[in-house]
Image 1 (cartoon, rainbow, N blue to C red):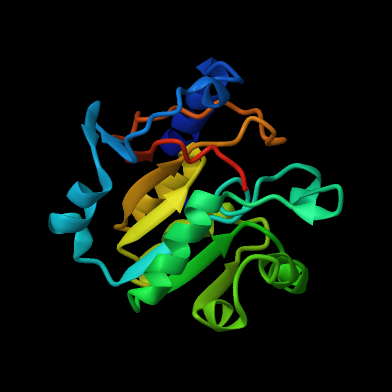
Image 2: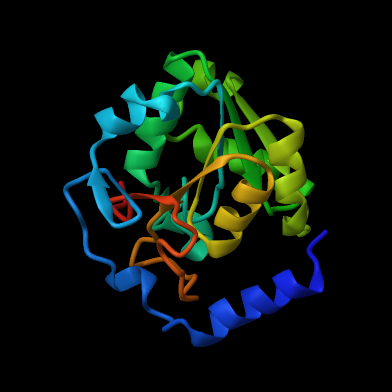
Length: 200
């Protein structure tokens, strides 16, 4: 459970960040930026960061672009760069967790959406954890499942990843996202996945 001081931090972040900040972040051809220093993906994979076995992903605005429930003209809109990253993690035999704030009664809907882009074999390799609106439990599940790396779009994703002992990786929101809250990109010294705001 978050302490009062942490609530104050969140309030300050949301109150003083321009609402369209995340959507104006430039698209970089370099996959990762950390602490203002450009790093390519090989740096991430070939250094101490590559020694991970368990990886977690947020769902809305990380895997699925959250506009109209992630569906436009009857078709779900995915973040293709993240989908490819997740499939690669499965290929490398890493244990993959999808941790979402959605409710348990939306599990079948999530699986149905993911069937549009993931093979049945890939879906079997994804552990889906639904928090049912209690997003503050995310840190608990990250810690209890010993997740090494966590991908997410929001400030809270970065905070809960750090609290749970995972390396935080920021995914940039697509401009069509319905979530227009500002995101304080880089404030937690997280890795930032450049060009990850591109939809499929």
